[in-house]
Length: 139
Image 1 (cartoon, rainbow, N blue to C red):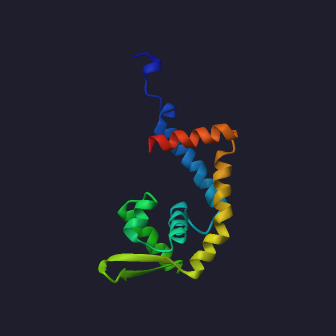
Image 2 (cartoon, rainbow, N blue to C red):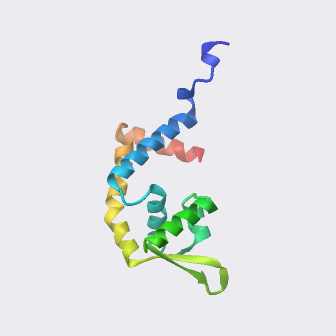
Image 3 (spheres, rainbow, N blue to C red):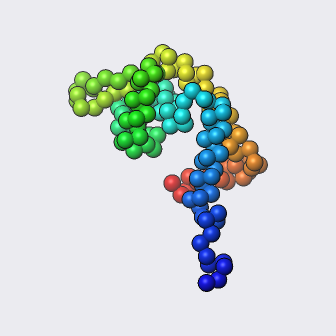
């Protein structure tokens, strides 16, 4: 087998993307130690919307059912969000940020933007735009 045809882990897109995500998470953890990226994403989206069903929040933050349930449970335990059954359909759980949740979001919104800035810092502005455009094309 020719060496160029061999499977080289370090040249695989999944491996490289996972390494980039690990770097991003390390930066996130250093700047926002009080919550995980998935918790912040859910809280940020909920603050943006005002309220949403758990299912809708999961879809909008690209989290599967099990993940969003765990994230919601942790945010609710920390009193950052509230949940209540929808009046017209008791099976649907409606979520809303609490005052404490909105304050937490405001406290970390600038740091969250800084996480993205630091993650992309090795690239110049054109490369940053290009990377984001390319990533958006493959999702």
